[in-house]
Amino acid sequence: MNKVMNSDTPISISAPYLVYFGDVQEESFAKTGLGLAQWRREDCVGQMSRPGCEIRSALPDLTIEQAVAEGAKSIVIGVASVGGAIPSHWVDDLASAARHGLDIVSGMHSRLTSIPVLVEATSTSGARLLDIRTPPPDLPIATGDKRSGKRLLTVGTDCAVGKKYTALAIEKEMQARRWNVDFRATGQTGIMIAGSGIPIDAVVSDFIAGAAEILSPAADEGHWDVIEGQGSLSHPSFAGVSLGLLHGSQPDALVLCHDAARSSVSGLGLDRFPILPFSETIECALAHAHRVNSNARFVGLSVNTSRIESTKRLDLLDQYAEETGLPVIDPIIDGTGPIVDRIASEFS
Image (cartoon, rainbow, N blue to C red; front, side):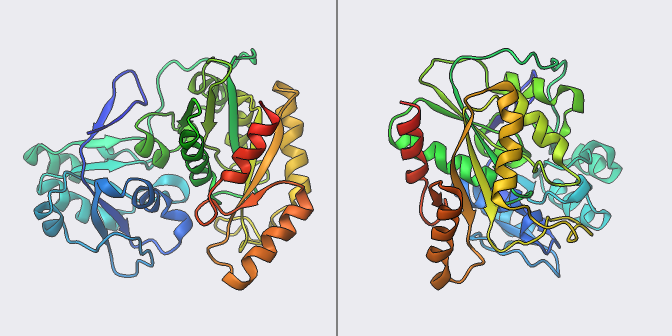
């Protein structure tokens, strides 16, 4: 069981999982399932999709019946679509899974319990409906008070550029060096991976910074919280959650995350908004970070190069390093050693 602490009562997700991708076509919307396949492969028996789905993870394709035979206990919706709604044509698949005894786990904004067919299916099988995107009650307003300990926050040039992957990879590298460190999850996938966290984009806007404060509480001076970033300060739709998280986190260190193949921000009809230059993104982030921590600084640039030709990858990273003066890596290919080296040298 993976216990997800997002309220006063922990939610226990029963493993192993069947990851459901529906008929999603863009990888940026399938980050929940792909994240589970990457970071919790041992808890996944396979993936299930509908005709038209373009997503292929490392997991085998299974039917519900095959997944049950393999021991699956839960079906996890592996999609984080714009608006967070569960498409109506997915409901029959999910209801069938529930009738076979699988718990349904969702990080979408739509509540599973608001769908009568699913409620009926679980009532006869004993399966559970688990909504992960539920913030704790009675969150405080942020105080802006300085907290002990060290904090790193990943920020992005856009949404879905690798902020979660980068934070997890940095935590892994710090753990390998025997640092005192915790990954702090702020999105549904991160919460499923870590077993705890707060779904920041489901928090009422007045309380986002306060939620970030309690997510990364005061700690020993040598302790690092590596905080999963959300959205982007330059995204027309999602800048609000990014700013609240930045203020509440009070980061000492910032890592900029970028998709090298992307020229405009993601989202329906938003391709008219170009990705800003690194210098503008860094300047904007520091202006707000310095409001709550005058010593905040960037320590690295993390780049998703999965859609870049391998012969051009290293030259591109060198170009970015010259442009920013920061260590530049792809966390999946290169690891995060150079970034953690910079942290060690600047915060020793």
